[in-house]
Image (cartoon, rainbow, N blue to C red; front, side, top):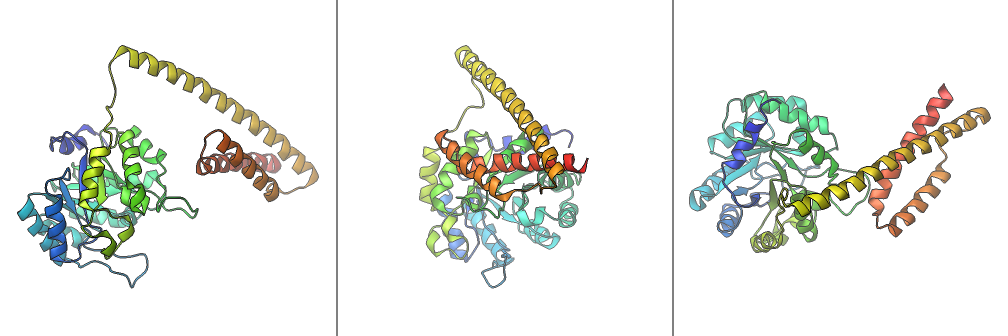
Length: 360
């Protein structure tokens, strides 16, 4: 993607003194519901009203959206409140209908992003549009797939593009509905620093009590905005009730969130930061050295197992290591989730080394 600076222009055009806030219900349910929420959001920090119109669920039988009828409600909400509107599109037909009803921001959902075929069809149907198009990360933690979807839009002459981080599915039980895997959006930021990045804390959280914490983490990581599912009566919502908050809660949340400066030019701050970063660099070097030494030991274990014709994977030993490291991690203020991720990666690399030795 060349000329990346053009991508941030649409965000700068809003002229906001705070992060962009996109808020509204998971699903448009009735005209009254959409209009009620829109009017309650009108005088908040929310600039854009969101609502799902088409809501195919993982399994059929649940509420799957009102369809194109809901686009008329969004248009009416826009006319009455002056808010911009936003909805998810999953095929060219959705795109055509959304454009027909003057939806301002379209987004591709996580299940759409996983299919280059569908993304290409949507990109072609949007070719040349001046609408803002946001791309949610794919369901699985696959950065190239996320980037590929963004690039397909860019190559269709769509310049107003952004990314939405909504977390990733995992078989492991965590405190989140979708694991944030913050290192992936951080890598996206690193590669394309001028690509606007929005956080969807609702889908990461899966429950309203941790939405604030996720928002704060996103702002600490210099995200450009938030997409928060907001409902005037969340407990009665027809879909994803447990993760939606009220407009009043959104107002309080935006008051309490701390907006960080991207940097500080004071000499004392810069000197202190450089000192701490030097310490980090030294420790990181030591970590790599220790990992290298660990893999040399793994190579020796591989030779011993080869000589004695012993299987590489020793499950009991692996479980002993995990249990011990989780306890040591707690003593060093490291979360169990983090320790598991780190040592699973180390274990896999150790297996790779042993297999290489045995096959060699």
